[in-house]
Image (cartoon, rainbow, N blue to C red):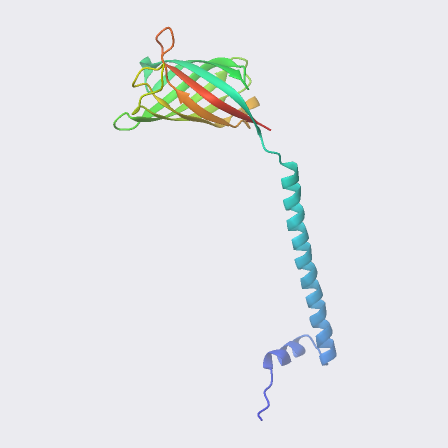
Length: 187
């Protein structure tokens, strides 16, 4: 039977001045203990961080809100107007809206900025609207409907979240409205 030698083991022994198999086993056992301790510490940290964040995070509470904007479309696609809110928010003030229609005018993406008159900050809302189907009664055919979502804010509204549906009726004075109904999510 041919005897083989492990050159890598011999080189390791010479490099670390290990003169006996006992010293080699002790060194390997120390490395294994350190490696095992590092794995255990990592697992402890992983599970501890996971349980802390999930225990302290509670789901946000949805609170109903209505946001009504009235706009002058004479400066389309950048229009101005006013807004009022009820429900989760009770603010009012100036509003701007940039309307971006698709080629055939059936869909629009609008960016609405609400600027409360009390100076408390701003709320930025994205709207996705469509004009292809009729709205339910009492709205006349051809007016739009869609979805809205708060995408950012400043001041008191920096961490606001909210979304819902919208319709675009004409108010009693004949001006176009953006009637947004949905929820603000409070933490």
